[in-house]
Image (cartoon, rainbow, N blue to C red; front, side, top):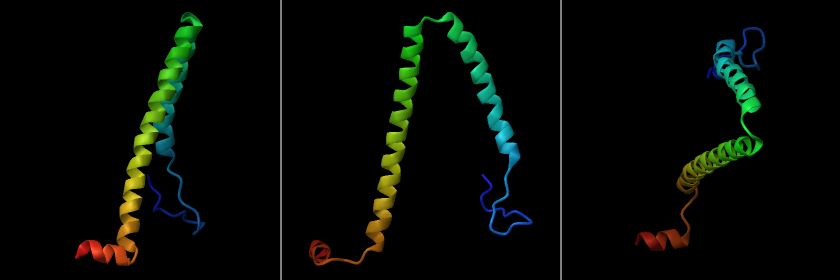
Length: 92
């Protein structure tokens, strides 16, 4: 992503990269088209099961990403905070 590029006329605004939006739009349209076709032919319980699998997979992926970010932030926090008496006793 191009978050570092500033808008030429607005110094406080970021420049929008429309090529990224166009690249991401193609799979979204293709997925919607395939989903419409599949929806017409599959029974409701199968569609429900597929959506449930999708949601569970997304939740698991979000959980692991959240834990990864949490660990990183904890390490940053622990390296920034001053040593306490208990920390000094552990070191000796």
